[in-house]
Amino acid sequence: MNEMPPDHARPSREEGGKKLTRQERLVNKVRLHLAMTVREIFEEMEKDELRPKAMAYFDDIFRKFMHNGEGVIKAAEDQKVIGTYCVFVPEEIVYAAGGYPVRLCAGAHDSSEIGEDFLPDVACPMVKSEMGFAAMPILDFYQRCDMVALPASCHWKLKMGEMLEPFDDVHMLDVPRVKESEKARDYWLEEVKRFQARVEKITGRRIRRKALRDAIR
Image (cartoon, rainbow, N blue to C red; front, side, top):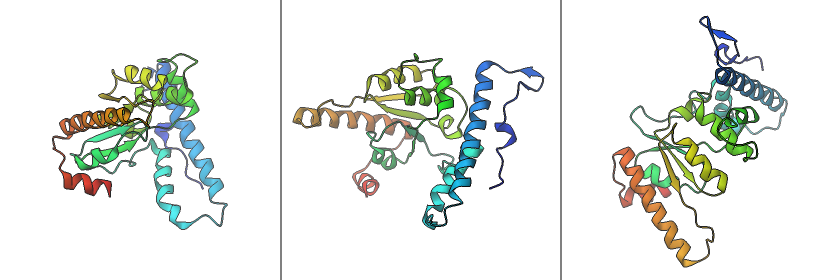
């Protein structure tokens, strides 16, 4: 595979005669390292003659990470994009309201360095990495979100929600700690309804039963 990282992903001490800040240098470095990592992975995968052809769809998405994630999102121009940080977020609600959910919960070692400007060293590495992606323009689809949904599934996710507020419109989902009880189920149902109301406000579309059934299917 001969495709090289794009020029705008390569780190530079100066851009347009202006000295870059530390965070700008970190952004360029993370972009470059992501592009190089993806390229190296593809070079190894191409050696696997048994790799299923059906993986081409996922390979195409992964390949876009060599170009800052541009083109990963297929949302229409007027469609609201809702970022989700965990599988606990009911994506069916987003689809039923005409929105476009995009999974943000992931990580990279390099973006953790940016996240450490917002969270302590002892914080969860994945949360620090996510914070780095959200705080700086590294991947295109992080910057395109109209709202992000973040379940408070652990203490660091809860703290992350607070730190994200200057960068995103954040909706926190309070996840019950004991899921087997009837009270926990009732509580979670109310959280889902609260999320529904917030999504409807963002998209400007009220969710109908048929739309919800279709989204679940």
